[in-house]
Image (cartoon, rainbow, N blue to C red; front, top):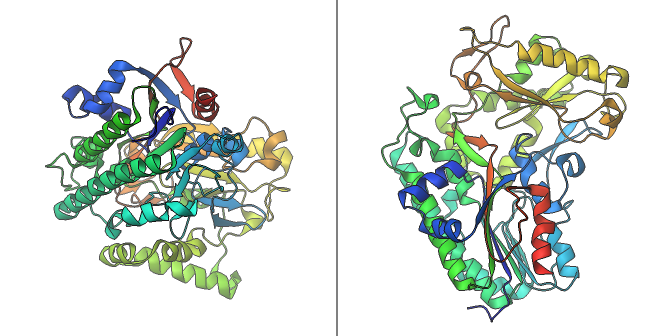
Length: 493
């Protein structure tokens, strides 16, 4: 147990946990820990910039700034000065708890996504003990004396680290994933308590990324009747994802009980999860079909460009079984190194006015802007005109049955005066479910496409926040992700 009155705030983040599923399980009696918190405390809507992309939500929470400031929206970041993608390394973020540490407030942090250690002088910080979003080659931590605790509490079995390696129709693999997830969640709860007991932080920030990872791969077991799953032959005979959520609830209850009644408890999710199957991967081809993007032909490519093209084609045409084995066996660093040169095609930048960036759900479009992109082709005074053209084209998209493909278009910038310093995609495309359909044919184009990947859960926009403690809310019913850090800091003052 922690020494009396040491732990003032226990904040527990459930990565991509869906509020509607949690409420359903609370009503069913399957999550009594959260049910108790909800009964004794307050519930708020948590608003994060998930509408840009799931990669933007944690950096926003961590830094207290919007994506237009911190520039993060994905694990792969566009570098306009290089005209290339670069894997995000996490060293640019300055988290709100660093200032708390400088004020002499001991802080404990476990597995906040997109974060690397910042050298806390008290408490503890552990990064990627086990992570869904991987930016490090291995786990990192400080101070050094907590290493013994980490060795006593090893992370998940290795196979649970493998994304894209579990097929949604493989009952045995899904059961194994569930067993490994629940085992890892139990280990995480134990590790968190040992770290708190050892270092006595005033704030403990504990993240459960298992809800994110399992949600992507087994959402069809939570909502088996969704239209996205029809005729896919998925295994949905057991409530496997519910088992994962129940184990998280058990660990939350244990941590809350150990913290004591004087500790303020916050349980939150920055965004949720919903049904889907794969992701639309046709945006690059569509922009080329409409003459907005142009690829370099084989004869004009350099030898290095040709090598990249051959590697990309080889990966695309590899049999599914080979791909699954590759994702299962290759270490994350190898996956990233092989992926990087093939994630963008070889563009003819002089004749490309806009291009798509790789994404796992939404469409992301970047204007090839002069003065911002090293190979820019669009003058600044045509920036908004180009966006207008893209929006007019996209909003009219339909499949061969006449179903609209685009649900919503979001400009991420107010006006062209801000464009030259803009770090994130200029236009975000939210798709209708028809865009995820197998055998998609886009009307009035030459584009035919299949969904990319085999994930059955896709990100949803809504988050939530439960709070129990002596905190004055002044009638508030919602809170922004960028407010969370200062809000928590105020509880420690």
